Length: 90
Image 1 (cartoon, rainbow, N blue to C red):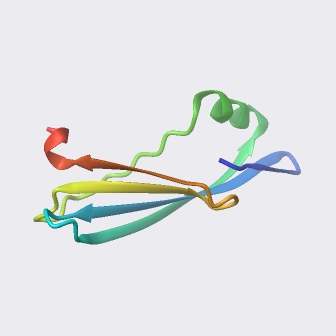
Image 2 (image 1 turned 180 degrees about the vertical axis):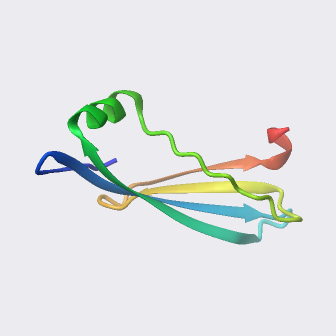
């Protein structure tokens, strides 16, 4: 995650995309979110040491078998993703 020092803050943005898929792999129920960060020094140090936790409730759409979460650092364009089968969440 890229954070830029500006005045007494560390600024950045993280984009999230939550996509649900059915058994055939068709994506639907795309739900984009983002977090703007403006961290003071103590929070910046905590995030760089411990990481950043983001929680999002996602309502399962009928027929959805998987949830894919895509995360993108807006400054650098670096991306990562994880796919979780709903059956594994019970």
